[in-house]
Image (tube, rainbow, N blue to C red; front, top):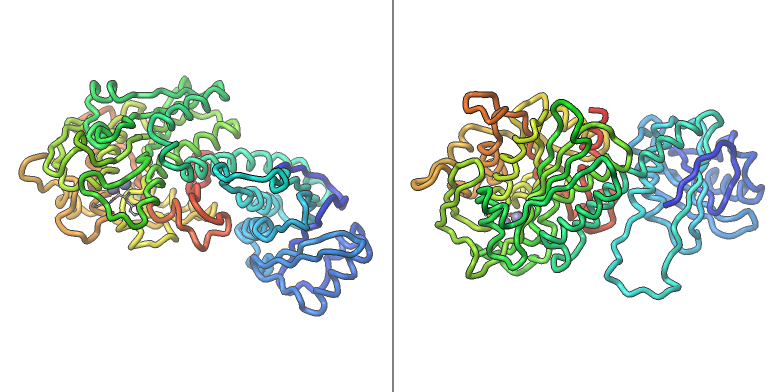
Length: 497
Ligand code: BES
Ligand code: ZN
Ligand code: ZN
């Protein structure tokens, strides 16, 4: 989407008019810029109550010599915060049809820069489709949407800068969505690594390191190797470092990157298995976040680690009953090969300790149990530090991406260490509390500062995005497929939280 900002009321293409619920006419200050016949038409619609401007509602006004328009509802005026504006912006794109064309002018008056930016963000976020694999007629190919934002004079410089920044963040969300939507025959561990490698070339301040299968084996990454060895597409770890020469501690993000999860020898049922292409959502989240940071010129140090593997059943696959040794030295009894995310993350979390983290956050489509608990509405959020958990929760709320606090209880940890043969086990004793036992399992692999046995454990949070990385029904920003959730949360946390 091409965007531009200018003061005044010059209209180009379809006019977009955001309105508060109950508006009975076009706001006075906008009247002068409108063609008389369009103005009369819109005022009649509003005064007769034919458009109530409820949140997320739109009405197209097409035809007439005054040009085309779309009215968009912001909901009640006292509730019209940045979230309402973001949703309204997204609703415009969702309701957009051929007759509207591809050029738009949004008319704002008396609106804060925050709310105008959110409206633009909503439009940009919703302007996404994944049709790379569809044959298209040339006539069907739509030109890029071009939007001009007309604001009150004096606000244009700040609004322009904020919208340009937003474009960078949205490019991160869309990258995460592209990765999630990509079919698993084309997005396998090495393909992800290649894409990261190519991506890094565009930025001077980013470095990507790939730890391939042989190197992972030599390094002792027993979790990553065990999960990935059953596939012909071998596993790897991809490390992204941004502004690596800056001194001091930095955020370290870790992502589960299972490019396809069949369950392995503990094979999943066939129905709906295609959805397991999204099981690399954690790796997409951290890659997308790095893109958001890089595209907006963030100058702090950040590290991201993705643990890439394909979980397949084969004669080379791991078995239930196996005992593996992870990078941390801890051994794990494998009781179910479908609980593989925690295995690859055990190595990723331990590796994170090498980068002197200020904190570690992992992202994973980890458990069906989390979807049972929170549906598609909220990500499960666990942390070994309550204040940190609150910071992430707040960052999520600030950008309208809900992350709900969940408990890390000693009883769950105990359940996961109860193995007769190894230090720990990859399956809880029963099916209850599966999202919590998974989180408790991960905690065992969060290193202490400097790997000091007697030291303090690094601040860490775990985000189970099994329900939120796809399947969103109430998310106005997403029509279908991968959501790209939490790129904006973590961008907000790192840059402002
Ligand atoms: N990738 C799945 C989790 C998942 C399930 C994500 C549904 C999204 C939707 C994960 O690897 C898995 O299979 N977990 C098992 C764990 C169990 C064997 C302890 C699960 O949730 O059933
Ligand atoms: Zn699984
Ligand atoms: Zn999985």
